[in-house]
Structure formats: C-alpha cells, structure tokens
Amino acid sequence: VACTSLRNSTDSLLTHHGCLFFSSRQKQWQPDVEWTEQYAGAVMYPSAITEKWVPPPWNDKDAPMEKVSNHTINFGPQHPAAHGVLRLVLDISGESVKKCDPHVGLRHRETHRVQDLPALPYFDRLDYVSMMCNEQAYSLAVEKLLNIQAPPRAQWIRVLFGELTRIMNHIMAITTRALDIGAMTPFFWMFEEREKMFEFYERVSGARMHAAYVRPGGVHQDMPLGLMDDIYEWCKNFSIRIDEVEEMLTNNRIWKNQTVDFGVVCIKWDLRKSQPYDKYDEVEFDIPIGNKGDCYDRYLCRVEEMRQSLRIVIEVAPPKRSEMKMSMESLIHHFKLYTEVEAPKVKFGVYLVSDGSSRPYRCKIKAPRFAHLVREFKLRMHTHTLTQTSHPALFNVVINYSMC
Image (tube, rainbow, N blue to C red):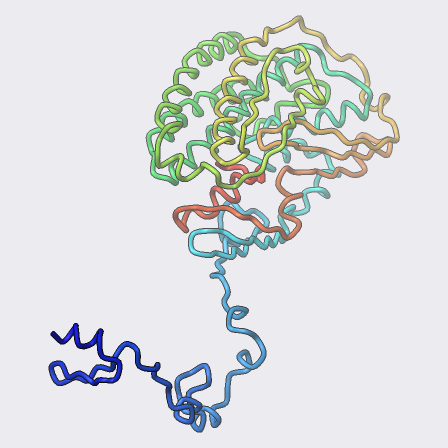
C-alpha cells in the first residue's frame, strides 16, 4: 500500500518506520551554499583554519601528479662484478625498471695505458669468461699492423679455442640466470662440462683461465698429443647436455614468464660472417636469429650458438705446421688500425697505434659494454622479483648487458 501511494502521490509525505520520504517527483535537494563554501579547498577543513597553515615549499607551484616519483635503488658500487667500480641508479616502478643511470667510474682502471707496454696477458682479465677471444682481437691487430699472417695451423687452433671459449661464456650466461630464477640442476650439469673445458685450457697453455695462449703471429705452442681426440669425445657428449638443459628450461612456465617479451633489443650482425677473420670463412656454420629480440630469444640464440660452436669444433682438422722465421721488428711500420672480433658478448675491438718500435705507441680497447654504459639511457624491462631486476636488464640487454 505504501509503495502504491508513493508512486501515485506527488505532494504527499510518507512515514515509514519513523523516517520521512519525499515523493520521487519532488524537486532535487539543494545544499546550503554558504555552508559549503568553507569546504571549497582541497582539504576538508574550514577555510578559516586552512588560511593560517604554511604549506611546504614543494607544494606551492607543482601539481600533485608531478610530485609522485618512482622508487630509486642503487646497484653497486659494492657489487663484486662491477670492476672499477660500476654504479647503476635504477628507477623502479613496482617490479619494472623504468630508467637506469650508469656511473661508469674508473672502470677501465688505466687499461689503455697499461697496453703501452707488452701486456698481452692483461686481455684475459678484461673479461674473465671470454679469455682467448680477447687475446685473439689483440693478436689480429698486431698482425694487421705488421702486415703478416699467422700460420694456417695456428689459425685453426685459434678458431677451435675461440669456439670453446664461446661455449664457456654461454654456459655462464644461461645457467647463472637459471640459478637466479631457482633452477639449480642446469647450473651443476653445465658447470661440470665447463670444468672439462678448463682442463683443455690447462693442457694447452698451463693455465685454467688466464691462458695468454694466443700470440701475435700464431699461438704460444702446439697442442699436445691426444688433446684433439679428447675434445672430439667431449663434443659428442656435450650435445646431449644441451638437449637436457633445453628440456628443463625452454618450455618451462616459470622460465618463460621471466624472459618472454622482456628486454627487447636485437640486431642481425655477426663478425664471423660479415667480416670473417682467421679461418671462419672456411668453416660451415649458421648464425641463429630470433624473432622478437627479447630475453627468451637471446636464450634460444645462445643455445643454438653452442650447437654451432660444436659444429665448428668438430669440423676443425689440424692442418700442416708452418713456422714464422722472420724478424718482427723488421716488419713494423708507423701505422694505426682498428680490428675487431665476434666475442661471446658481441663485438670486441682493438685500436692500435705504432711508432716503429717493438712496443705499441697507443692501444685503445673497445669493450662490448662500455659504449652502452657511458651514456645515460632508459631501460624498459619487466621482472617479477626486485632481486632479479639487474639480471634480465643489465645482463641481457647487454648490453649484450648479456647475462641472460
């Protein structure tokens, strides 16, 4: 009855449980203007009170949205991998890195001045997971300066150990990234194989890491008997290890959530094909290319690069020996040049200046990461844990920042 009266009556006032209801056709309620004027400010306080307040200095001109900023954290400079030391100021929004401001510091540590003296072993220390590739870049620069060519056997040995070094680098990149996500098994599997490659290093040079084996004009010494057979047997077994790691990671949901569509940056370029050096123009191999250029693509490219490196290692056969019986000083000219190699972390270059003596007048090193770190840039990468923010960003965009 009450509902019927409410619909039909336009002027009546109904009482229901002690409450008053106006008809739906009554005019809308209008507030008291004088009463609401005192609450016209942004804060619900009477204006007589707010007029006495003194606002902070950052609140007088800037709009509220301009004062909102992301969280800023420091990566380094105490990080053990940041030689020199490297400091990265990361602008974090939630779990996404919006901006990275690098402070390179004394990263080079007088490296270029040290190279004015005969310091070939120093190139091993520039990247201690890509040792012989760095030596190869410097040796090629000296040979180009002298207008000489290393013996064919030495070039084949360089190619052999250059690809073994590439595999060692990619093992470090893939397995440590998997370890950060929580996959411990690939780390132990692949580091067992990496230990075998350290033994190959030791047998050929006497050192496990800093070999100083690749020299201008060739290599330090010939390979010992039986080493090629052991490397061949290792290659056959290592291909099975790659399949096992791919079986654990490639289609893993957690791994794909951390890598797909993150850190997109890519360029189709490989110096072994575009500017071949040593014997790379005489071996058959393919350059893997991704579709998106994200972290997941770089992981797949590294896995395929390890397979292609195995293909090169198996293809390398020891040719006949040849020796250099010429004076090095008699071939030196006043000259300057630039040479580069396809290192595991992309291009590694050496700029060499000669004054005619047995020592270089100036040696400038173009490392893969310095060109990216020396300028301020923005990184738009997404991660799923703040503790892993630096890994897909700084290791993959590696820049390459190339630890996947």
